[in-house]
Length: 304
Figure 1 (cartoon, rainbow, N blue to C red):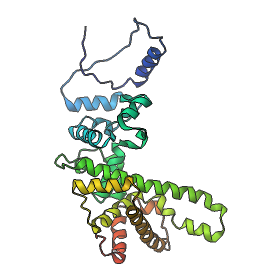
Figure 2 (cartoon, one colour; figure 1 turned 120 degrees about the vertical axis):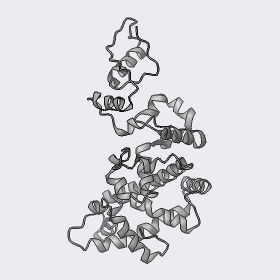
Figure 3 (tube, one colour; figure 1 turned 135 degrees about the vertical axis):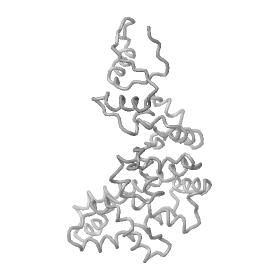
Figure 4 (tube, rainbow, N blue to C red; figure 1 turned 135 degrees about the horizontal axis):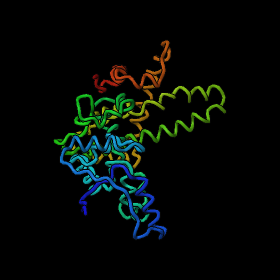
């Protein structure tokens, strides 16, 4: 007889779901038997290796391995308790903990769908905005949860940063704001082929918006700083979040100005042989090139 306490399922999602469905339909028998393999160890490295290599059907990601880290739990608690946002430490966590619509609404309100934060996506926004790595955020997200020298984990999830949760929330919300404009542009782009040549070309010149959201996010902080916001102060971060939520005109003007500056620079680059938007916005050097150009137009843009 073995008693298991705080056991975790590593490889058995399909079996677990089948048992749940049978129980829900009233078909689960009292004498049902399930084959399990229980492993007990205090060796953290061994546990992680078992997790990684046991699951052959749905590969466990590094994100999942980091899900129980103290810093991940801390961010989740702050964002839920203080701001009513659910920070998902691992895939499917929100639906698993709150399976019904009623439970979700009770926790976070009717608009709960837009208040669930994937920690991977949140880390990408932080990497782009606070660490000046928009290309890596776009193209190297596999390094986000790496804890060795090749990874970004320790840079992003700094235990000593007392307002990390607020920084993550602000950068993630600003990314969602930019992505909304990206979606609107994509819709216009799809319908542009029906327009006269001049109107169509005017839309097509902004096609870089389909690739540049992390770069736009990075430049946003310079506009915020210019107007007196300190992105390293909690009160200012909350103020910025409030402006994003209210679709404040100031945030829109930032976006339009950045977009205007970028289209001028991209228009120059397109005259060079071998230039492609997607390739450019995957290059680490591109943020420095963009900032150098924008600094000539707006002196408050910092050169890195």
